[in-house]
Amino acid sequence: MTEPIIELRDLSFRYYASKQDALKSINMKIFPGEWVAVIGPNGSGKSTMAKIINGLLIPSQGQVWIKGQLLNETTVWQARRSVGMVFQNPDNQFVGATVEDDVAFGLENNGIERDEMVGRIHSALKEVRMDAFLTKEPARLSGGQKQRVALAGIIALRPDVIILDEATAMLDPLGRAEVIQVVRKIKDQFNLTVISITHDIDEAALADRIFVMEQGRLVKQDQPSDIFALGQDLIKAGLDIPFTWKLKEALKARGVEIPEQIQSEEALLSWISQSYLSK
Ligand SMILES: Nc1ncnc2c1ncn2[C@@H]1O[C@H](COP(=O)(O)OP(=O)(O)OP(=O)(O)O)[C@@H](O)[C@H]1O
Ligand SMILES: [Mg+2]
Image 1: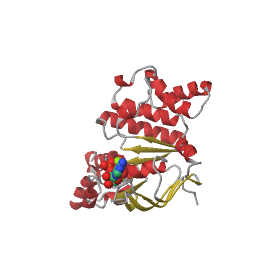
Image 2 (image 1 turned 45 degrees about the vertical axis):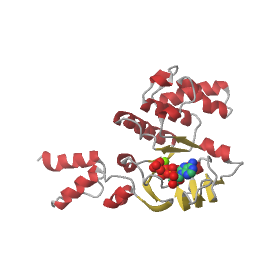
Image 3 (image 1 turned 135 degrees about the vertical axis):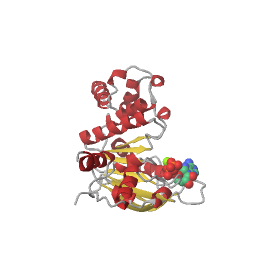
Image 4 (image 1 turned 180 degrees about the horizontal axis):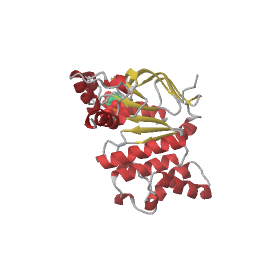
């Protein structure tokens, strides 16, 4: 069997001076090349979990394993290179005065040679379609463009895993679509594992599996169709029911048989038009 790329074993965490655990005995396995979504209401521990995986917080109990290595003081630098994180606020991610400086920052911190660095900056920016903005200042970019530069900074380090902590939450629909499209592309290209923490149903629908968090616990893990079938319980979990799902249910209630494999909005639309409109 394939080894997990990330494994959490009995992981608990409590913030300093807090009276209760932010994470409670989490066990989780994520496999190489998987796209997983993590959903759950505000305060359920999603960001805390991401920060622990990235070595920004140290577990109070339990272990994090990354690529078969236990995360500890000696392995944390290796772990940070292999797990890249994009956060919610595009304005808090920029550290450079220009787009190219920003991508260079992470490379410099990791001691990458100058010649190698220039090549990596250019190709990473090309991958996220921001190569035309090399010398631009962050203030001139849209939110979606800033997040794409943040992604370039990460892929330049050749990671195995990308964690998106509500990375599209502050973007307009266009910016959101651009970022997701880029993530899908680089995921396939570099065989990345993606962990997407999100309240956005369409983003969660892209995942192979969805993890549901509630008050610091991992309460469910399943493929999107089974998670969406929870219906009303999903709203409690911090997500709205997908439009496609609602439409499918409404059609079924009217006696329309829809094949099980139809999940996405595009697939449903084309199925409806083929089944009805062409006749
Ligand atoms: N720096 C901190 N100090 C103390 N408590 C914190 C800190 N950061 C978060 N918490 C608490 O830990 C719990 C989990 O918070 P976390 O930010 O991980 O939740 P989340 O699921 O990411 O929420 P959201 O959807 O709002 O981003 C919450 O009860 C929160 O109040
Ligand atoms: Mg959060």
